[in-house]
Image (cartoon, rainbow, N blue to C red; front, side):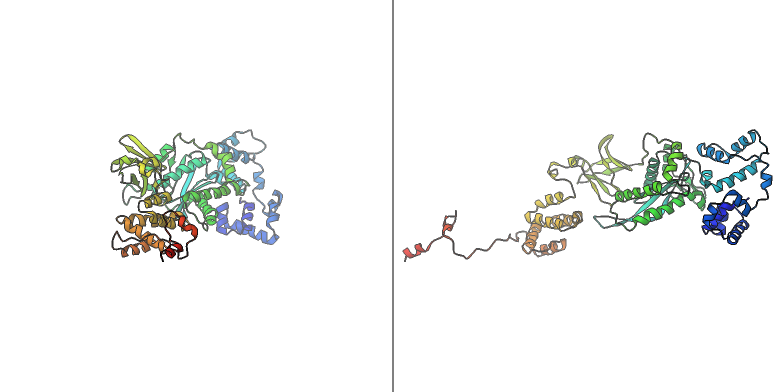
Length: 526
């Protein structure tokens, strides 16, 4: 028999025929009967909510009621509780226990009728998810389709932040993190962080057929194979990867719903704010996820996190002692500035290794540099804007160790001192006039390392001239002034105050090194 109570609730929500059929599993005729009854009786949602079983039976009489009364009624509530606490408890096992129990006045239902009645009981108690997903069994993962902009504070470059989404479908617990790209390294790191967020690993991972998850071993073959690195991750956490079927969105309906939640509750809230680093953006995403997991209440009055702690957290597999990490090896040559360059980022080594080829191990979080089998040094791995420097002061020669760090105010001022005081003054003017000091680093670098590379005296003279003129120093202005200087000896002298034409005071003759003749001298000599 159709659940008229569930159908009427959906009718009051304004659901269509197709939606109600899909959610309740009834016929379109049942829906029509409910709508006609509502119209004829003038029922409202409030009245339907307080109606008892007798009233429902009066509105929708069941011809099978007399027949059902002659059967022993199963304890469906107890069956549901057993299925929630024991993931190995099956409906057939519950039916066998029902049949084997001492018989009362009535008969026992057959297995097919028992399953049908249990499905109707589940539909009226809003526990459909319990039937479809076992606690601790699966984690569904995907990339959210929409992105967020991240603006570099130094260069002004706008990059896209791609959001990784993972969900435990039983409890609905959602994890989200932003990454600079959707490549294999980010994909692996996202899974590791998702497991750490949940505090354990699920039995299976259900991704879609993204290129970072699976590939075709033979071109043109429809069969897909899990990437070797992705499989290593699964082996490390004792889990299995079961990709969703191609063009079967229902296989990962839970993560599609989670992505929709992320679009509304995360991207919708953060899209209009300015983000300059991925760390800053991820901190804001964590705050939004607290609302999604802990504050939003669902139809049964619980939050995702409450249900996760109560029914799922204890069933997750424990995390291994060591964290899974990606590893890549490279042979890199140390530059003259005693840095190696890996993935467009620069890492320092002791300056004595300049010009040598060293082995570099790259993981998701660290960069370790080896000379043979010996560890030379280790750096946290840089991410985001290309061309960043990670420099340890002890790696620099002594003449460089009196500065706080490369590519800083102290570093540029220190370099400018080798040109002269006017160059120092110009560099400080350029640094001081920028709202963000780092935005002036490129101008300072161009002036010192391009204009002054082989023309130290001319650059110093040009800087002095622009100071004398109270000009606005820029790379272009200094270049034009240097073009007017025909030789290294042609220099602009510092400004000197003009001599005064006022009569000296009597005490002026006492100044050391000054000889002033008074009027008496000229009178005596006629």
